[in-house]
Length: 199
Length: 145
Image 1 (spheres, rainbow over the protein chains, first blue to last red):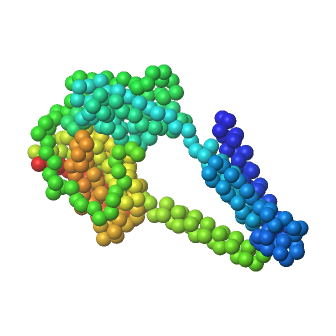
Image 2: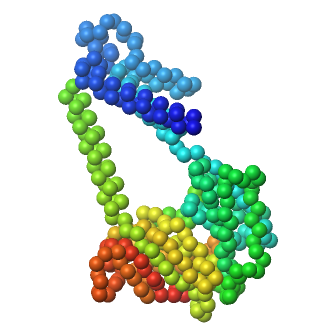
Image 3: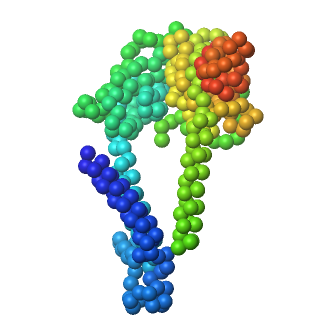
């Protein structure tokens, strides 16, 4: 909630600064000239060392003698802040697969579009947007019918969630244990394609 | 002052062109509902295969095959995703973590298809599906040795 308020304040501040600087620019109160130039032309009082913007954050130093650029930079900073706070918060949804061959399985986070693979201990995890109320985990391996595990992330109290696969129910009528990939069926591609696994 | 307005005009023009390009790309994407069956080379249905349509522009939400080897998925593909266009859409099938099958969609045989608009009474091919989007049922796909 507070993040949304900060995002809105920052965004409104950015818009006001941007619009304000455009109006000031139009009215001629500020110019695209550097302060030094204006001093040399006698349009401004002698403040030869004055900067329109001077920011020092640790090793980072930003200085500008151009008032317009300074205003635009501050506006850009406000927009950046709004974007940072406006980005959806994410939650880690993790699970553990209760199966001796857990690492052979693929876990799909339905509705979130993410495929993950459990590690040797059967553990898996994936970040999902915080406002997602229901995540359906679909878990399967070659020759086995997929099994579904609905999760309500906001209601879960213990992570990782334990997923116990039904022992034999839903087994494919043809488990095809001797499946072998035929390389001839995998076409080569000129350009790299988006990965299957969630990033 | 003149320079300032020129810069602003250029920035606005760039923004308008970018938005137009995004809108154009979005309107070029067509939604295809792809249904099919995955079988072994012996013709037995393969459960638990992960199926996905992928092109240079993105990947569909993948789907597992059920106990009968059937799958259904929705894919947004660029209009004119033929091999000749330079950005073909592929059907990929994964067996556990291994990529077992990847072929251009247009190389797969259609069992039944219903484009979103027109072509009633005409033979339906991939070209009309690329143009309008719609539903397509593929003939069973044999995977593996």
